Length: 301
Image 1 (cartoon, rainbow, N blue to C red):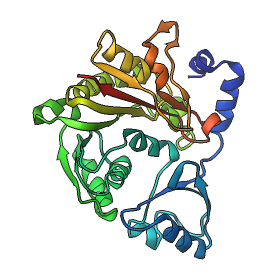
Image 2 (cartoon, rainbow, N blue to C red; image 1 turned 135 degrees about the vertical axis):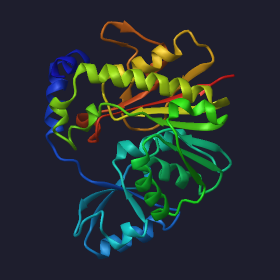
Image 3 (tube, helix red, strand yellow; image 1 turned 30 degrees about the vertical axis):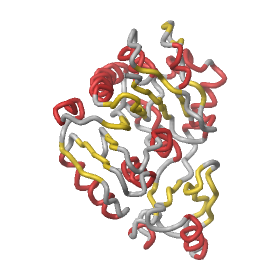
């Protein structure tokens, strides 16, 4: 893993990444504006002794610098006033930018962090179709939908690689793809040694099939966000490049926010699509988040 980091980042930045991975994450919350305003919830938590810090550019996002009780057991949490969510995990829904009248598909929905965020941005309107392959994960997804007061969604137990069988065409699609989680070392130190290059190759194959499936179900002009919590190019830029290569029907759009650095279009000796530079990468040492990747793809026709 470190040998690959050295190829990607160089010696100095690899050291910075490894040091950042040893620092615990500051927890963050996304306030559920379907139920309460940011000002109201902030005041409730401040009265309980919590210390919050606003997340730049995200009026309903806060870092929790001090918590006087378990964040997942407060009265406010149980009422669905907020979701415990890392900043990086909030970015895909923001980039997707779903509208109130859209048909939106979340291809890998459980446990619901991004699904409930999408519903929040849609103001509980439109149509939100949530796909989940693993039956055992669906109950937690449904609990979170109910807790957060989501009313515009339907949950379907299906492998998203078979999405075309549903005969749907969507305005917006989120593919937060299953991955090795190489960016989650700050949360789970075991990932330093639990994943191998063979795991990366296996996940990349699954990711490519999912991406193919999602792109085919976009309306002309529709957009798909591809994201992972991996920093491996093989699970990110390589996946997108291999599926979109020589395909003029899709364009990678620029992401307009203050987080992350540009994606790679030349890495590990491979020259990739030029517009992959429009994707975004977040690293623990540069953004103080988990490692993350996000890309916005538009179907032209």
